Image (tube, rainbow, N blue to C red):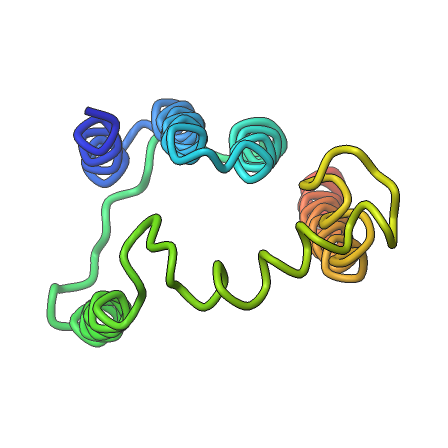
Length: 175
């Protein structure tokens, strides 16, 4: 059911031309993605998706939309000019689908992550870190640099958007 809602939301995003509706549907898509992740018992990833995707990204898009038109301008280029971009996106999508066939089935107890990595975390976390929640211990200690990197990426994206919007506002006021 969630996949059907995701597909319907994605089609709505692709076909709508009113930018406010597109931003709201993108926020809904992010929340639906968070629900899907939550249904697969990935609560930490679901919370991140909800906070960043539906929260921060929607607010940034609404802020950017306040400085732009309300409707998308019609394209004047022909379909032939957009064909290379469509070919690249289609090729990348086909590559991702091809790569999925090499992944272990969802929940496979003999997947490499379950056989090699998970037992180490389960056995060593209490002794090395002494944090009662295993997920918190992994994110804060074992993968601390990875988490720090994600924070840096989000911060850098926010600063970049602020600088872009700031430059746009400065140009508009000086005219």
